[in-house]
Length: 145
Figure 1 (tube, rainbow, N blue to C red):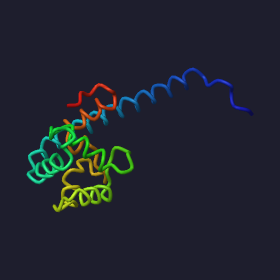
Figure 2 (tube, rainbow, N blue to C red):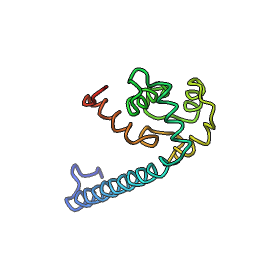
Figure 3 (cartoon, rainbow, N blue to C red):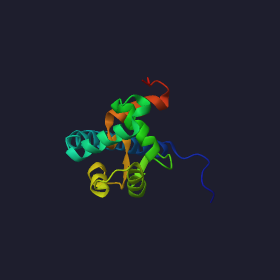
């Protein structure tokens, strides 16, 4: 027999209820992930090697932005992100830092900064203030120096 053209009402309420549960679970998971990243970011910002790298990037890419920290880090990120997807994998990271003249331990820094362990680094993991500026720039609301 062919399936009914419309599902019985209890079935569609069940599907809708299950979908809403899945949606709420995903929202909770995303909120928990965001909170974890923010807490982890606070901890790694005290890392002296990460601070030194950020200072290096500001000095290397900051002339255009009068060496202001946040726009300089965003400019560096734009150059480092060769494929433009907003995330750096280990290959992009290492190549970009070598090209910039950085001689530190890029593998260790990558692992320290990759807070979620996905094998890529987002600007939100590297520097939250720069990430917020980057978002504002994408939305057209950022103020450049």
